[in-house]
Length: 447
Image (cartoon, rainbow, N blue to C red; front, side, top):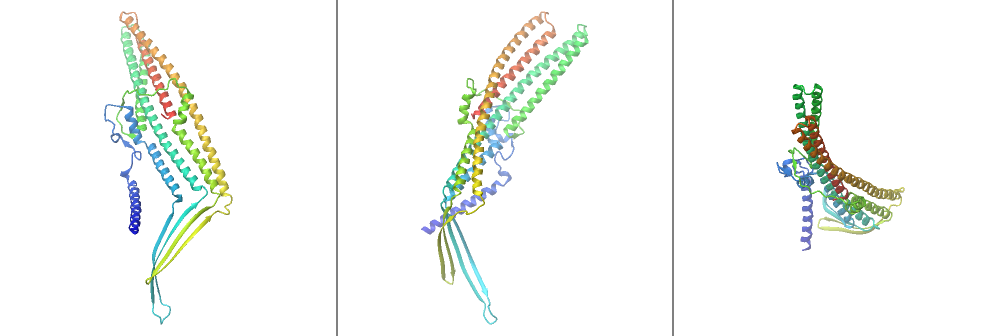
């Protein structure tokens, strides 16, 4: 029964090894690339081929296809393997060997040749008994490295979501500004035609026509520039999605943006201290550096190990064997001060890791102050811009009434229309400046 159990165990270990090899060979094939190992096409994202796409759909597609997120997730897998390796320090290592020895000889001209063969084998078991905390410190460091890697995934996801939101809002901003620029160009085109008509009847001189033509040309150039900005924004959105060949997406107007009005930079910093993934990752790395100091200190002490070795030969129905057990206390007697320098280097790395945490906290707090001020300024600008737009609309209404009874000129009417278009553009810019400040705060605090 015991023999059967051992054979089943060996078979299971061999099967596990074969499965790992098969998975490794499969990973080498080009057609086995995961999302993030290749540039996805729009059709592979599962997004609708036409119609409006919500920001939530775009965020889900980006999280699936981002190479940065794939790299972060694979780093987690590598960290998990390192943890298993660290935990295996106290597990025994078993080695085995088997062979057949054949000898043939003819020792003198008169003697017959001799032939002799023997089977032989050996097995050894080596196990660490105690190492004064080196393995424990290595395991703790590996666990903390895993925590840092997991926070790294959150950092990558956070950055990806921010990139999608920023790209979506930039696309919306540029589309609205393009529409405003086209509206302004149409106003100037109408004004130019009016000046031409009036010049023909002698109501204005040629300078008025030339000026109107210059104004129209400048507005047309502005419209072209605004149209190109839309194309650039679409390319930026594709890059944030990690895809190629996307159609002209229309981002649905699903204003589910989180706002942080009424929260100061200090209030937001308190949230970030417990929620910001980049800060949490650096803290885990600093704690891991502290555990590495433990490892280098414990490395000054010897390691106690136990080994058992069994050797056997079988020749002509005779079995000869030997069993040897030994305990070993291993310690470097002289290594040129390398262990002392390892401790000093580990302490330096610890101080660097802690300094990075402090640096990130300072940078994060400063960024939050800037973002909060930008949010307040954008709110005020938006309020003023909306009031200015309303005044421009009222002014255009008055000018239209005066124009209809002949009390206002075409120039006054065109100026009023252009003023309204400019006010609309200012509202668009202020609105999306406010959105940008809110999503930046969201990214900084890890939400």
